[in-house]
Figure 1 (cartoon, helix red, strand yellow):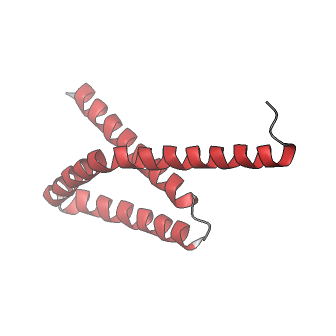
Figure 2 (cartoon, one colour; figure 1 turned 90 degrees about the vertical axis):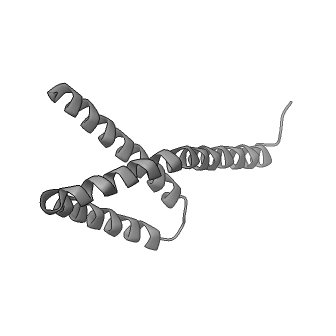
Length: 106
Protein backbone atom coordinates (compact mmCIF):
# COMPACT_ATOMS: atom_id res chain seq x y z
CA UNK A 1 0.00 0.00 0.00
CA UNK A 2 2.88 2.35 0.80
CA UNK A 3 4.42 1.77 -2.63
CA UNK A 4 1.10 2.54 -4.35
CA UNK A 5 0.73 5.75 -2.34
CA UNK A 6 4.30 6.72 -3.22
CA UNK A 7 3.73 6.08 -6.93
CA UNK A 8 0.47 8.03 -6.89
CA UNK A 9 2.10 10.94 -5.06
CA UNK A 10 5.05 10.96 -7.43
CA UNK A 11 2.75 10.88 -10.45
CA UNK A 12 0.69 13.78 -9.11
CA UNK A 13 3.82 15.78 -8.32
CA UNK A 14 5.19 15.12 -11.80
CA UNK A 15 1.93 16.16 -13.47
CA UNK A 16 1.77 19.32 -11.36
CA UNK A 17 5.36 20.16 -12.27
CA UNK A 18 4.76 19.66 -15.99
CA UNK A 19 1.61 21.80 -15.86
CA UNK A 20 3.40 24.56 -13.93
CA UNK A 21 6.50 24.49 -16.13
CA UNK A 22 4.43 24.58 -19.33
CA UNK A 23 2.32 27.43 -18.05
CA UNK A 24 5.42 29.33 -16.94
CA UNK A 25 7.02 28.87 -20.35
CA UNK A 26 3.95 30.36 -22.03
CA UNK A 27 3.76 33.22 -19.51
CA UNK A 28 7.45 34.03 -19.96
CA UNK A 29 6.87 34.60 -23.69
CA UNK A 30 4.95 37.72 -22.65
CA UNK A 31 7.19 40.82 -22.46
CA UNK A 32 5.41 42.49 -19.55
CA UNK A 33 6.15 41.61 -15.89
CA UNK A 34 2.59 41.76 -14.50
CA UNK A 35 1.64 38.26 -15.66
CA UNK A 36 4.65 36.77 -13.83
CA UNK A 37 3.68 38.49 -10.58
CA UNK A 38 0.05 37.40 -10.91
CA UNK A 39 1.04 33.81 -11.71
CA UNK A 40 3.44 33.63 -8.76
CA UNK A 41 0.89 35.08 -6.31
CA UNK A 42 -1.81 32.74 -7.62
CA UNK A 43 0.48 29.72 -7.20
CA UNK A 44 1.26 30.72 -3.60
CA UNK A 45 -2.44 31.19 -2.84
CA UNK A 46 -3.36 27.84 -4.37
CA UNK A 47 -0.71 26.03 -2.31
CA UNK A 48 -1.88 27.68 0.92
CA UNK A 49 -5.55 27.04 0.13
CA UNK A 50 -4.88 23.45 -0.92
CA UNK A 51 -2.99 22.66 2.27
CA UNK A 52 -5.71 24.24 4.40
CA UNK A 53 -8.38 22.20 2.61
CA UNK A 54 -6.35 18.98 2.90
CA UNK A 55 -6.03 19.44 6.66
CA UNK A 56 -9.48 20.78 7.54
CA UNK A 57 -11.87 19.61 4.78
CA UNK A 58 -10.26 16.55 3.16
CA UNK A 59 -13.34 15.57 1.13
CA UNK A 60 -13.48 18.98 -0.56
CA UNK A 61 -9.74 18.70 -1.22
CA UNK A 62 -10.19 15.30 -2.90
CA UNK A 63 -13.00 16.66 -5.10
CA UNK A 64 -10.85 19.63 -6.14
CA UNK A 65 -7.86 17.32 -6.67
CA UNK A 66 -9.93 15.17 -9.04
CA UNK A 67 -11.00 18.33 -10.89
CA UNK A 68 -7.35 19.44 -11.11
CA UNK A 69 -6.33 16.07 -12.54
CA UNK A 70 -9.11 16.24 -15.14
CA UNK A 71 -8.21 19.84 -16.05
CA UNK A 72 -4.52 18.90 -16.31
CA UNK A 73 -5.31 15.97 -18.59
CA UNK A 74 -7.26 18.36 -20.81
CA UNK A 75 -4.72 21.23 -20.69
CA UNK A 76 -1.35 19.42 -20.92
CA UNK A 77 -1.58 18.54 -24.64
CA UNK A 78 -2.62 22.11 -25.43
CA UNK A 79 0.21 23.54 -23.32
CA UNK A 80 2.67 21.25 -25.07
CA UNK A 81 1.48 22.43 -28.49
CA UNK A 82 1.70 26.07 -27.37
CA UNK A 83 5.19 25.74 -25.94
CA UNK A 84 6.55 23.76 -28.88
CA UNK A 85 4.92 26.22 -31.29
CA UNK A 86 6.48 29.13 -29.42
CA UNK A 87 9.93 27.57 -29.59
CA UNK A 88 9.42 26.69 -33.26
CA UNK A 89 8.43 30.29 -34.02
CA UNK A 90 11.41 31.62 -32.08
CA UNK A 91 13.78 29.29 -33.96
CA UNK A 92 12.32 30.34 -37.33
CA UNK A 93 12.71 34.00 -36.37
CA UNK A 94 16.34 33.47 -35.37
CA UNK A 95 17.16 31.64 -38.62
CA UNK A 96 15.50 34.40 -40.64
CA UNK A 97 17.47 37.08 -38.77
CA UNK A 98 20.76 35.23 -39.17
CA UNK A 99 20.14 34.73 -42.88
CA UNK A 100 19.35 38.43 -43.34
CA UNK A 101 22.53 39.47 -41.49
CA UNK A 102 24.99 37.13 -43.16
CA UNK A 103 23.27 36.70 -46.47
CA UNK A 104 21.87 33.36 -47.48
CA UNK A 105 24.50 31.04 -48.93
CA UNK A 106 23.50 27.99 -50.90
